[in-house]
Length: 136
Length: 332
Image (cartoon, rainbow over all chains, first blue to last red):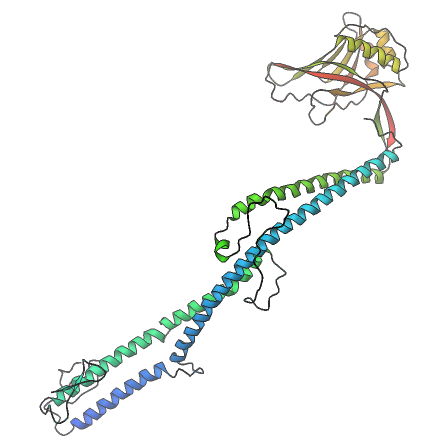
């Protein structure tokens, strides 16, 4: 398939062209057919790209436009997500220290209460034993 | 002379009223060149956006993954730190100020909360844990102490609930200051058996035995005063070697049993003092030594803790003995 063939054809799409010095009575027909064939291939490429406003299909042109928008949104959201995660981490670390403090306070209170309960229980046991328990 | 295309300078078409001999060739080459460019354009468009392997498909997949990461980061961090009270309208509307300091109880903490994304990413979490650990340990210790105290209370409650049971009681002898002396613990050459001997301070021993007899209401007796070897402790028992009358007066009464409840100055495995089950009073006459003296023996429940004492060597520590009256009572 080449222009040098007889008859000549295009390198791409293999469209037949009039042959120089020949096709005396039909070169116009051959040429018109070649031009129409070329137009058909242009139309096919045009259809592949489609209308940028065609969201129903959606067209390739529309998808490309949307991809740009979506990528921009994702990039923006990513920056926000990092900030949110960082703030959550910041807040969580502080909350964790506060929780430890609360646990420490509660544990100290529990220990104090338990110690008081132990003292009271010891005293109650001594009373119950009418003093016989005190041997120390 | 052919005319160069206005759009592609590598394409030429025939000029009107010229190129009478070459217009066919020029036209064919023009069409061929134009179609070659069309094919090239078609290929590039297909590569850009047609099919699952196209660049557009790859971009859309990347954006989808980006969205997934964006969505999961806040929720993942929430999950990681156990945050449950975050009620944002959506994952991107979380609004919260940066915390600049920790709670005031962490004075001297020498750390500040990471207050930027960069600070969060470079935050030394290991150091944070290291700094916070003492406070957690303090809480753990308090909880452990509370648990211990509560267990003690529970044991008392259980005893009260179970009702009184007959238990041994060791009643202190008022005014009894005990007898002081030197306790020697010896580990045999094989290292498997320990012997103990107690050598009372001479004056203490005499005074103690005499005072004990008085306190027991038995009169002064006739203790073999001044003999520092009269009280011995051998493996598992305490032996008094005295004049038989004195021992009988002091220890053999069936209604007044006395025992040893304290042997201070060293640690016994499992308890701070010997736990004495009672007096082997009936064996009084069985233990007459070669000098005609009688012996009374007290059995012990514990063994001395010789720790790192080498085999075949002895260790002497200050110790004291104190007597308690043994009885039984119904107690809780």
